Image (cartoon, rainbow, N blue to C red; front, side, top):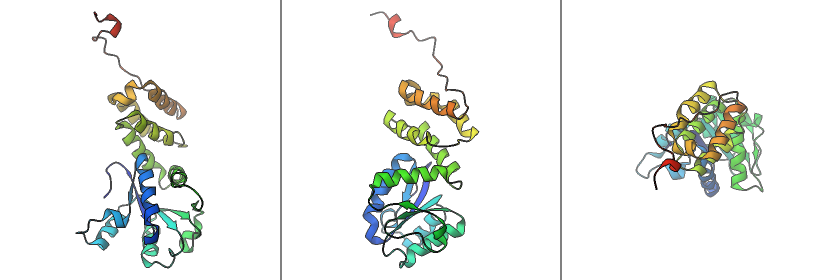
Length: 223
């Protein structure tokens, strides 16, 4: 149920909130985040408790959508408990319920009276700022950036990466070495400029595009 090369985010929610959880999953999928939602991601033939356990013990982070009924659910409390026990970052979304218990040390993200995209963007920023998630999330963003299949796809990843306070040297080197192999990153001038701005922000040299001198320029090709 996890998309390879994506940040693995478990969304803990009560059944009444499944529609909002699904919309949130759709928004985050554009930014190298693979979300697990129990009612969506478990095949009918699979033993569901086992699948939930697999997700809980392989996730990189958790979002807990706190709305009325969440604290009374044994399942959601246990899911959060697993995350806290593993030392995994828990991002509470406050929807008329504040973080409580051991989760109470987290301030949470305001969810009431906000659009799904606004909440999703706040989650992305939190993943970039949280010391438990930053490195893994940036690595996933860069992996998917290097695999971009369209300029829009690359633009979305770069928009988030621009907000990162730090990017590991090994990740910057990976961009420098591999960006030229992707036609979008190589040939789209605006994307390449955006990419080089990101590299220079973190003290890295811009991507150098190698030109094949053996191929004639368009102006030199006989009509």
